[in-house]
Each structure stands twice: as structure tokens, then as C-alpha cells.
Length: 251
Length: 287
Image (cartoon, rainbow over all chains, first blue to last red; front, side, top):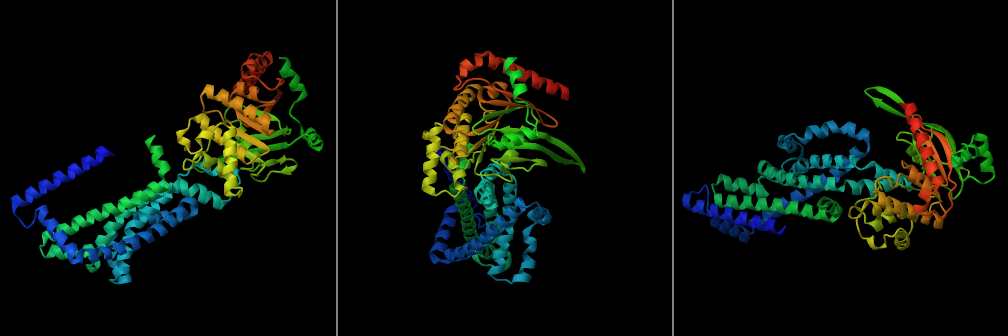
């Protein structure tokens, strides 16, 4: 782990240095030096504009992702556990899994208007299907011998679900949440750029059209950091819930 | 072939009448009466019937140690699962202390071939699992689980996860989990089939010691003639397709049995040779 963190830091430093040198050498507004971007970033932060928009974005992200997790895990579990539910729904799930969600934005505008509801819906749609598919796969792959063992010791259906199926499927569910979080951030930015020009996505459109490249890069880098931070958060939760799996993998 | 021929005349598989008589005298604890079972397999719209067990009858006394031996596909695991109540009989019935088996019950516990330990629980958590399902309060659960871990020699490993243990130790945990609910009947499905030979012998010795202390009825499924004879009071020999009881053999070896001395005993050698010949004949008839 130590060498990896070291390599990461080195990589970032070299990349930043190249950017700085290139920016100064080219002396073009298209690629501002990193120091200038950092300067603008601090200015945006101090003015409160970045934080206000970030808060707005995070609220959309949290609401949409929360709904995607609750509904996605529930439907995934039902599909994985009841074959009839799976056969009834898998057509739609598979079709929508790989469909470009951006195509649904106009429909959402018509249905939900231009408010926060539409943005939450976009985040939801981006994250939902991958969570369903992973949960479904996880539940279906639960080793039958554990279920049989539990039944032999007198487990009721509820025990089988909570003590066997859910913990056994947890690594797959968390993998779905991890992928879902990445998609949710994409959905958040997409919604803010295409729907209402608010949040960090709105800032991108605003600075892009004004040729304010230093501010534009400052926001983009902020979004990258946000995406990584949220994924880290999911992974931290994952480690708490399925620490046993990590140990198995190490062995 | 003194031992085998004697038992063949004396303990030939009981017919219905003999079974009922034995039950009436209160001598029999588990009664398997004319049980049959088929499985249906559908491949490309063609359903084939696979007869797993045909007309199997068996009577087992309290605290008896029974080994069931037979080639793969003779339905011995199916029979064990039916005694546990995990799968129903197609015809016939199974009685335990006079009550018909309709599902798993607190009087029985299974030890699985693949251990079936839950990888997300520690050794202690795995033993507690069976107690949790019986609604035993938390403090008592931990105390009972620790007690049984001690009996199988795992007291220093309660906080380990299953993958951190050797196969033999994992099966000790599986045994502790089954013993913890204090069942009358221990159903063991090739429990030592996936551990190395030395570990296997140690586990056999420990199991016999436990059985002698705890007073349980044990049904032990195995592929190994040596294991079957060393452990059991009676050995049930089964033949495949459909699974039938070919013969039930008494093991007239004194207890406690010393692992090394027993294996040099002419009775032991005769019995294992006889079982091998019997199984070989059954396999040849099939092919």
C-alpha cells in the first residue's frame, strides 16, 4: 500500500509540473497554468460560490443515490430470490442497463419539470440499473449449501434471508453501489448541464461559454475530487460490511 | 468370513413386520420404512426420472453408531437429507421416536461434507448460528458455543474466520455447531471426506471419544470402508441406481477401539475385505 500511495503522489506531481510548464510555455487561454487554476479555485472558494453550488449538487446526488440504493437493492433482491419476478422484469432491466440515460432527460423534463425533482430522477436513473443487476447476481450466486445448512438447523424464510442471503450477497451489492456511485456523479453533472444550469454542472456551462478556462478547469478538478471522494466513501462502508471478503481475497 | 456371515443371518435388513415389532419394544429410535425417492431432470423438454432410492428400510437403536457406505449415486446423501427432513419421501415414511418426520427438528443436526461454515462469521459466530436460530439468549449462546469449541479443541480459535483454519479445524467447528444444539441424532454426510489422511484419523478418534461421552445416535456416511468399520456398530452397504440397501453388517469389535490395534484385528480386516467385495460386485453389475 505504501509504495502505491508513493507512486500516486509522484504521478500527480509530475503531471502537475508538466501542466504548469506547458501552460506557461503556450501562454494560451485554452490551457491556463495550474497555478492560475489554483488561484481561481481559491477565489471561487472564498466567494462562497463554489461551496454553494457544491452543496446544491451534493444534495441532488445524495437524494438520487439514496433512492437508487433503496429501490435498486429491493428490486434486485426480489429478482434474485423469486424466479418469476426475475423473468418478469429482466427484459426491462437489461434493456435499460445499457441504454444511454441522457435520452430520457427530455422525457423527465416533460414529466417532472425543470426543478430539483428532475435532477434527482436523472441521478437515480444513472445509478439504479447497475445496482439492480449486481444485487440480483449476488443473490442468485449465494451458495445453496448455506441455505440448506440454515434450514437443517430450523431456519425460517426470514432467517434464511437476513442471516444467509443478505450477508452472502453483500460483496456483490456493495460492488453495485460502488459502480452506481460513479454513475450517479455522472448523472448529477449531466442533469445540471442539460436541465437547469445549477450546481457544479451549471458552473461548467457558464464558464465554458464565457471562455473562463481557469475557472472551468477549477470546477472540473473539483468534480473529479468529488467523484473520487464519494467512491472512497462507498468503499469505506464496503470494508466495514464485508471485511471478511477482503481477507479471503488476500489469502 | 465369520463376522460378516454371522451378521448377515442375524441382522438382515428388517422387513416391515420386524421393524414394527422392534419399534413396539421401544428399541428403535429411527425407523425408515420402505422409503423411495425419485428426482426429475428436464433437459431440452425431455424429463427423465432418476430413481435415487428404492424401497429402503432401516431401523436404528438409540445411541447406535451407523455407517452408511456405497458408491456415488447410491442415494446415501438423499437418505440422510430425508431423515433430516430437508426433502420429503415419495413413498414410505421415516419415524423418529414414533413421530413421523415432516421437516428439520431440534432432535437432529447435520455435519456437512463441505463444512458449510459461513465465511462472514468467526468460528464462534458460526457455532452460535445454530443457537441463534433456536432463540437462545445472547449471553447463554456465547457460553454454550465456547463450551462446545472447547470440546472439539478449538477454544483458542474462536475469533478466527473459517478461511484462516485448516480443513480439519473447519470440520471441528462444523461439528461444534451441530453438537451445540444438543441433538439426539447426529447426521454426518461424508464429514471427513475432504481432509488429509492423518487429520482424518485424528478426527475419527476424537469423534468416537465424543460419541462415547455424549451419548448420541450417529448416522455417518462415508466412502471409506476402513472408516465405516472403525467407527460403527453396524455398517449399511448400499448399491446404486436405484439406491438399495444391499446388506447390513454388525461390527463385533469391542469399544473403546484403539485406532491402530483395531486395524490389525482379523475381524476388522475380514469385514473391510468383505465390504469391498460386496461393493465391487454391485458396481460390476451396474456396468
